[in-house]
Image (cartoon, rainbow, N blue to C red):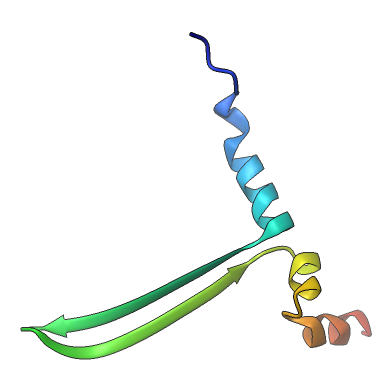
Length: 69
């Protein structure tokens, strides 16, 4: 059985999908010592191209301000 896809362009395809479609990563982290919670961290990141972000209303105002310069 031969592979049907060449893996040499996998990173390029991944970046292309991220810029075109975007991804949202969300994580909640609690740092504890001796079963005592000390710090709670809530992280959220949106990764996408500017076109995709402005279509969803993210960075819309920032984009307009920078285009007017």
